[in-house]
Length: 135
Image (cartoon, rainbow, N blue to C red; front, side):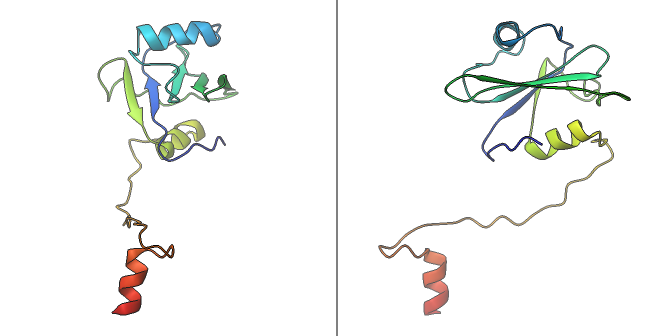
């Protein structure tokens, strides 16, 4: 699986794309249909009409990466019925579920506690650690 940083934006194109398109053609789709910037570092995801092929394109600051997957059986989930417009933003977990064939309509995400990390002090200790040590 593709490892992406947590702050990476992932844009899913909802309309089918001709999979014969490569870097330049997909950049045109991003600029025209998706209203995005192909050089932003965001991941853009494209499907064919039958939803058996997927391409992911991203700019790494030095060049474009193009990832391509073809299903031998089945199809990728079609999100056009649940989302309006040409594109939808998803997170890394939803992208992984989509690529692995997990039905996102039936899945539920649990709420997770996310603790903010604050760095402070001259000795490199966090303020939370300093508070815990003094209290």
